Each structure stands twice: as C-alpha cells, then as structure tokens.
Length: 226
Ligand code: CA
Image 1 (tube, helix red, strand yellow):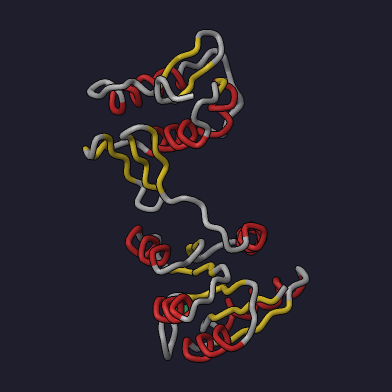
Image 2 (image 1 turned 90 degrees about the vertical axis):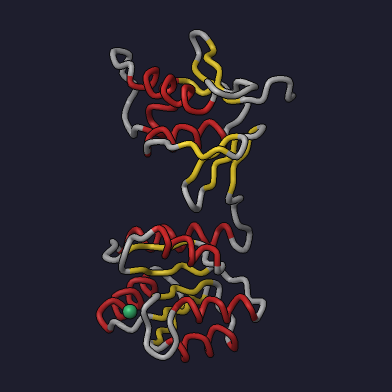
C-alpha cells in the first residue's frame, strides 16, 4: 500500500513518514502543495494524507485538483483548527476524513486503516426516516423542513436510532454507544434523553417515529414500513 503525505511542517511530516513506514506502508513525503498535486496525479497512491495550510498550493486546491482529475483514492486531511466550516469544506471537496492537530499517531493510523478498508465507497451523508433528516456533515437535524436543535448526546442518540432503524435497541446498547458507559439500572439518563429527543422530534409531527418497547428498549421506525 502506497501513501502520499503532503505536509510542510518538517517535524510532523517526518513523524508521519516514519510511523507509517514502520506500520508497513510505502510512503512518499513532500512539503509543497504543487509537488503534492504533481505526485498525486502522476503516481498511484492508495491514500493521501493532506495538510491544509501548505506553501505553493493549499490543501483545498490540491484536493480539488485530485478529484477534478477523476482520482478517487481516499484523502485524509489535517487541519489546525476544529472549525465546522473547514470540515464541511474539506468533505464537500471530496475528502474522506479529517484530523485536527495535534493528534496521536495511533489515531491517524486507525483512520488510515479504516479508509483503506472502506476504499472508494463513501458512507451516506444524510440519514432519513419519513420527513426526518439528519445531516452527518453539518450535524443538523430537521423534520418536515424545520430545523431541530439537539444537544450532542441527543444527536448521537438519534444517529444511532436512525442507523439501526427498525431494530429494537436495548438500553444497555444505547448506554455503551452513546454514553460510553456500562448500563446501570439505577440511572434514568437514557429514559430522560429519549423523552427529550421525542419532544423535539415527534411531539409536533406525525407520524411518531420513536417508540418504547416495554421491557426491551427503543426503536425508531416509520409506522407501516416493513
Ligand atoms: Ca501546514
């Protein structure tokens, strides 16, 4: 597997080059956007790690050129700021994932492996049930075209319910996936969160999508859908 790294900070570049080489990848490192673009368009890489702020040509332009040329290898971009606009811009231009500096090498390696496994297929950017929409890139939710504001936990809970639509999700699973905790029957944190989520997503709308299955858990489904 060949990886191209385009990173102008010498220390970061070397660190990535060495780490990825030790992990068994064949790695090329360049420090300039123009060189990065040239190599990405003329050589065959399985993945590109692309910094945003680069001399010559910035990461956005390099990415744009790569996609314009019809090259679809996964691109993981590195950004110095965790800004939603940056993330959305990169993903809209065709990046597959991003990391905010500083990051741990283990994190980068995990992302690289996931992207290589996933290859060229991209996951859907919007999850839907009836007229409910959850936009994964912009982290926005709307129903019947009306914007719904959710907390981070409510968003994660709704995302999980939508991804596993039609499946009854036990509280223990919700606890581990959304709260990263072991289920403790003394806590009603899940009930409270589900109630709040329903108030926002279902109360003013028809049909009701989130249901309690007594003694089992919760399910999100469109009534009547098989
Ligand atoms: Ca840079």
